Length: 415
Image (cartoon, rainbow, N blue to C red; front, side, top):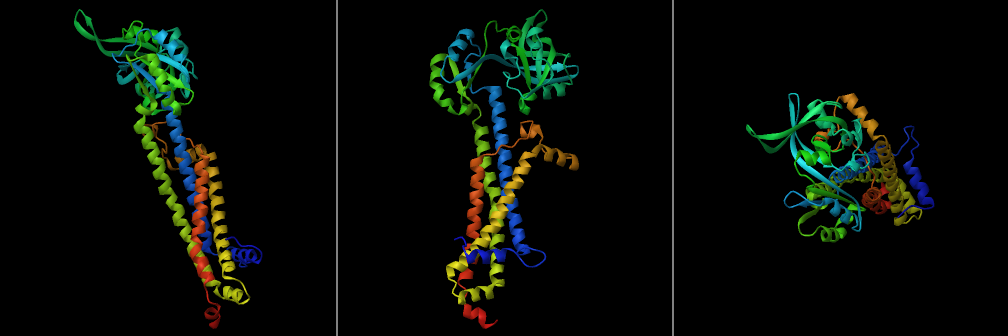
């Protein structure tokens, strides 16, 4: 299959030209460039999609937890004891009781629907709140002075910052001498955070659990638990133990159930993108085949002389197979280097393109997450390289067979 001995010397001579412009031919150069672009594009696209998927799932699971326990009536009593029991379940690393309610938040003339999350005091630490970063303020003040923490998109929409007071209105009404009225209270903004998912950043209001219980009049109750596991992919293994602890009075759901459509869509998109972008490599190897056919036609006299000197058909075939594989291999290596550079300097390239053309390549309101990241899956990378090598090899079959089947008599008759 691969040239050896004098065959390699012949292949090397065909790969290098004595002409001043230096390479096989323009078609061979274009073939190599096409394969490089195809391999590079596939590696870059799959890495960006892997990074998007990993970042999105990490942000979503960090916000929602791996397992959610809810009360059928919207309330869970005796949550301290239940929290202690859940911590003892095998595989559970963290248990957070919380209150989540829909509200209307206003500031001046601006208003917005939002979700209040009442969280325990020990959660108001950056690494425990599972957020990207604190943009303004101090999370600890939420407990100390009874303030609220806003997602940065919500804060931007309302036009508020740390130190401003926002009014929160609950849809649940209370009786007054003048009839029913929505419950409302003003809270100071103590911090503005970035969660990392646009949908959460535009609706999140964090509040101390005690303040949320008083505002929503839940006394010593919560309405949700979120559980974090050692490995979220093994959630099904821990489900039975969690259900045994909570009993039949509470509803248990995993991240796979409430993110099923999202996970399925991401997986389908990965497969489709691999196929679509992989077609670029398929098209590129046709150029390899066409350039080899042109080389066979150009070197027909040389092939005939080799045959008359005793070269076997297989030897001639190996020469042209080697030429095709070298062209394909150089393109694959160049494509891998291109992908490595692009992935390493992804943020700089993205910023440069946005500045140069005035574009927004990564709109968080469309892409859900706020940052564009790339994550290389080495299994996919190896699969891409192997696929490109196999296609390059297949592209050499017809030209190599045609070169091997040339009849020296017919070729030399007209020389």
